[in-house]
Amino acid sequence: MKCKYCHTPLDWGETICPECGRENKRPKKKSSGVIWVICILVLVVVAALAALVVLKTRDANSSANQFEGLYSEFTVPDRNYTVTDEEMDAQLGNTVVAQCNGMPLDNATLSYYYWHAYYSYSVYLAGAIDTSKGLDEQSYGDYTWQQLLLDQALITWEECQALAAEAEKLGGEILDTCQEYLDQTLQNIQENVDENDQFETIDEYLKYYYGPAATVENYTEYARTSQLANLYAQHVADNISYTDADIDGYFNEHLSDYLSQGIEKSDVSNVTVRHILIQPEDTEDDASWEEARKKAEDILAQWEAGEATEDSFAQLAEEYSEDPGSAANGGLYEEVAPDEMVEAFDEWCFDASRESGDTGIVETPYGYHVMYFVETTGNYNWFETAKSDYIAEKQNDQLLEVLQQYQYELDFNKMALITSPIYGG
Image 1 (cartoon, rainbow, N blue to C red):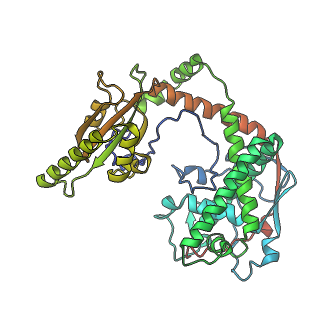
Image 2: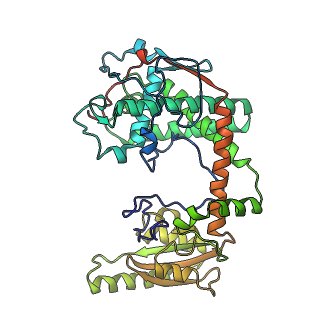
Image 3: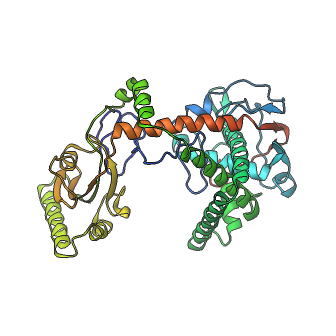
């Protein structure tokens, strides 16, 4: 696999390019782009930190301001919001510090948004923050890390509240789906608690990650709001209509940007393949390479002697493949575009004679790949990329129109944050 921006080879399963630092994602059949960072099931690492620190000056004491949408940044007042665990009692945790169209935010719930922002940016913060000091004691530019993360937390809360309210208006299926996700989330947390000797209850687990005011009850409400916002954003994306001419025009309009990413119009369709990667123990040792080749041949022979189906190949991939990015999914790589993979892998996939069910063994710098060709998808990388971007742009426009209908009030003087045990500062 190669970086689509600078074409540096990437390790299998690697998405962040070590050369240019950009994230590589395959185009999706259906856009799931959102305009803010919200996720309650998985902590998402944001691709760039810049959005956090480009702040617009605003009167921090004003209230009932018209919400302006994504990163309508306000300057969080320069003060210390930190309190001790003992001070963050039930009364302080229940203190309302903000409202969005009458929907309240208390300090306990603020902690979820605040520490979620920290955990989301943790990969980037690891090299920038001294964990022996508090976030309020360290600066990035003109702001402390506490200010920056609090700013992100409040922006996310505003957007979650507004879009969750819109989801509530839709009712029906979207509420049912939210409840299913919520039940699964709580079940996952319970399983983590059961498997971890450190915690006896979910409450202990939540307090460790989010502070002493965290409870199952307030976490559930936070999770429900966040998930409803995600589902509403996806609902908007799913209902955006377009024609082939729209996507072609969008690609042409942004041609220079796409060319800079190495994306050109092509009549070569994407493909879907499965593979089983067998790596040599020592890439500098010929005997290790020979051993890896023999193992790859034995696996292919085992497949040929069995049912010889795609499903049986997937089972072997789960058992033998050393590619962390695809082994658990039966070695599946969907919508592979030309020039996306390393050369030998790419050449095998896009051989003009390739047909569904074809197998083979390919050698790359990473090892030997037992290949299974699933299909030519009929989708084209340039078109799918432009379609995803087009839908995301239209989605953003529609969500911003919704967000502009909501008002918020903030009382920074009542806001309180604790130093999380997991942070250690």
